[in-house]
Amino acid sequence: MRFYSSTSLRNIPTDRNPTTIQVGANVTILQGTAPTIVTYTVPNARRALFGVVDASLIVTVVLAAGAIATLEIDITPNGGAIQVAARRETVAAAVAGDHRELTWGALQLKAGDQILILGSVGAGGAGAIHASGELQGVEYDA
Image 1 (cartoon, rainbow, N blue to C red):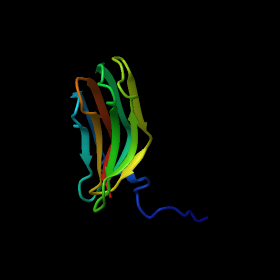
Image 2: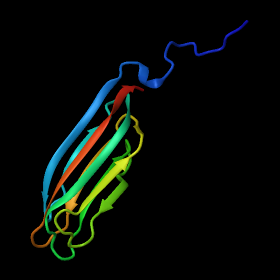
Image 3: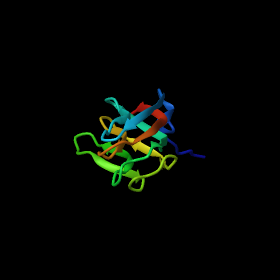
């Protein structure tokens, strides 16, 4: 009887030297600003597999007429240009308590790729939001 299988003991890509990735932040964003909430760049000779890419916002101070608040997940592939992967936004002049959530399923990135979670509030007058972002996954040998 013959058995055919991998010649390596490595059966799945995440079984060798996995590193847990858990990055998160909470920020207050004032009107007219667009800070990065969370960022992660995959190191050389590694890959990253994220099970959780999550962001949320809640309006804490009524936005000015015409202003919107946004959440955005951007991915910059190694050697490439930044790409908007997902985006959620409030209605113009959103009232306090208005909220948005942004969740991305499983995501795999190669060495040198970067992921950003950004928040912003349009310019003009008063307004503020509280935003949070989180990345959870594993990083392993390429």
